[in-house]
Every structure is written in structure tokens, then in C-alpha cells.
Length: 312
Image (cartoon, rainbow, N blue to C red; front, top):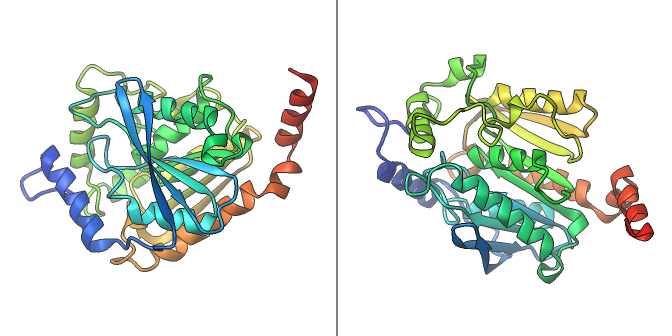
């Protein structure tokens, strides 16, 4: 399966149509027991639309989620199945954000929207039925890169967890997995290059940490990480490198690579049935990490409680 057309990378309109068609034909919008609620929140370029997924056994934990799609495609509908399944398996309230897309809204619109959404969710957590100390951030593909950058940004609120699915974290270096799987494994290098051009143009420095958070000289380790990758994904190596760097710096980070899987497999549950147990496994990890007992015995939670009780 490839997102690249026979005569080079598809147009933006074609890219959007491909993902929309995949959502209709290759994914499953289940489980239906998860309720949804439309959320409208302020953004730097105007109002942002969000979709809050509430599972039947919802805990007072939350996950702000950013979809993939190469900065130019994707949205709430293309990731409906993934978000439903992740909310159901994790037991947390999941707020998916419809951030602005390029080329209509070039860099840094997407990251600015994302940071604003996370700050809004933290400030309004209680109204959403979420404990602000149990608020996580996550995303897949370019959305995973955005989520990772937020955890590194000093402008972000304190977050309990980062959840990354096949994240794109380094737009500068060519890793072995990029060379091995850059053609014929769903997302081709030519398509990524076209999307990046539409998002950044020619002049943008790709070393900018908002585009390549893996390139930070020192990674902030305040946010634990659950990082899942696919064996045949061009971005597998940078996901593994991010997990390794976080662990070496003292962060609580785990890395899982799903054998036989390709980029975007998590949104292809009907076409790739093994996507379902993979997403459910990630959901179980989220549930375990954000469980009340787990949070209350963690050094980070106890430090925050000490600060709160002392008024600092």
C-alpha cells in the first residue's frame, strides 16, 4: 500500500482524499459504547474544534490527542476509529484536536494550535471531568512529533504522560529505517517531502525543535513516555532513538515495536486486524500509567502534592 501516485507524490487534495477513503474502507469506527462530545476551544488563529471521547468506565484522567496526516491531511473523522478504541481500552477521556493544516496554514500553525489546546485542556480540566495532574498528551505520525515537542516546551503545563504512535521526530537525518522503508511501505519518501514542502516551504530550518524534537541537545525528562513503532516504518529508528535518549537521561520511557506492521497500521483495523490488539495494548499501558494508585505513589505526584500543600 502506498500513498504515492503513479506519477509522483499526490496533490494535497488527493492526499486528503486518500486518508478519508482509508478511514471509510480500512478502519472500524468501534467500539460504539464510547460517547462523543463536540468541544470548541480558542486557538491562536481562531476557534479550534475538538472531539471528546468518553468511555463507559471513564476515569478522571485525560489524553489530548493530535492526529497524523503529514501536516496537510487527516482530521477528526480519519482518526475516529483509533480514538474510540484508544479511549475504550485506556479508560481515559480522549480529546482529539482538529488543528490547522497546510498549505492553507503553514508552519508553525499546527504546533501553535497544539500547544494552545493542551494549555486550554489543563486550565479547563475539571470542567471536562479530568484531574489536571492526570492529563497526558499524545499523537501519531506528525501528531506524535507535535506531542513530543510539547513535552519539551517550557510553555507547556505539567503533563503526566506522552503517548507516541509511530512519531516523526527528526526531519534532518536519514536513518537506516528511512532508507530501507522509504518506498513501498505505505508512506513513501516523495510524499513526505511534498508534505513537508507544503508545511514549511524552502526557507524553514528543519533543525527547529518544533519540527525535530529529537535534535534537542538535552531532552526534558519530566514526562514519562509510551512509544510504539512499527517494524516496516521509515520512522522506526527515530522513535527508538527518542525512547533511548529519554531513558538514558533518567526518564521513565518504554518502547514497543510491532512486528510486521507499517506506518499508519493503527488506523487500518479492518484491513490489518492485528492493529486492534496493538492499540488495545497501548490503551492498557495508558490505563496502568494513569491509574490513581500509580500516580499517587510516583515521585512526581508526591513532589507536586508537597508543592501544593506548601503553597509554592
